[in-house]
Amino acid sequence: MSDIVLYETRDRVAIITLNRPEARNAVNGSVAAGIESAIDRLEADDEVWVGILAANIEGQTRPVFCAGADLKAINSGEGGSLGTERGGFGGFVYRERKKPIIAAVDGLATAGGCELILAADLVVATTRSAFGLAEVKRNLVAGAGGLFRLPRAIGQAAAMEAILTGEPIPAARAYELGLVSRLAEPGAVMDEALALAAQITACAPMAVWESRAVVLAAASADDPTLVRMTNDAIRRVMTSDDIKEGLTAFIEKRTPNWTGH
Picture 1 (cartoon, rainbow, N blue to C red):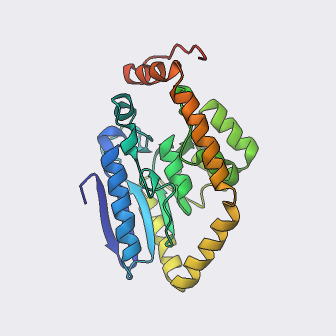
Picture 2 (cartoon, rainbow, N blue to C red; picture 1 turned 90 degrees about the vertical axis):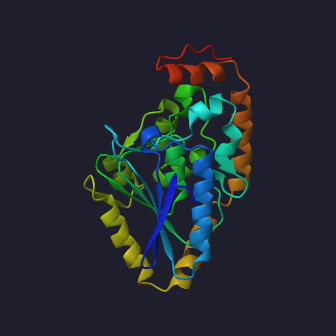
């Protein structure tokens, strides 16, 4: 496994760490492949029962768990590598697995970064964290499950506001709405995530895995239709005149000049 995604185990817990702090942990092809490989390793290890998805934020002035898709990679024609056949975006968002994964968030999780969080089973976050789907600000559509998972997690009204404005939800509000299960102080998120993982691993693993499967089946009965609708929306947006403008404006750090075509 490459150093761009790190993997370690502590007792019965696997820690998967995004390791592109200089790029705000944005997902490129290497990150997607690395996460998929880490999930393979987690699922195959009989001694590991729970995973934690974390991110390296060292050296960041404003901590970012994950900024989502690497827009520079998309703009250079490498967008197809940001997902995998089995896992979808980041090698993770649609990945079938039996073992629960806790997202340990210290910083901003936006766009595809938020969609990674929404694909996890539990979220532990610091008080300085935030969660958002900012795609509309770049003439993009949240295409990795966020448009239907966020409303399920926090309710339609709050999710609709976040999705249509592109503005992030602060951690305290996300906790109130039910997206975050535990809050921690900045720098302490891994300790809190490990404590939660220890409580889970103290239980019977097969019962945990089977219970998780039932909960997810009840929540995602309509996913195939929603995925198809999301993909149709992405195709329409990605063939619009505004797509190049959105990506170029982001790279040039300026306000986009939208046309609506």
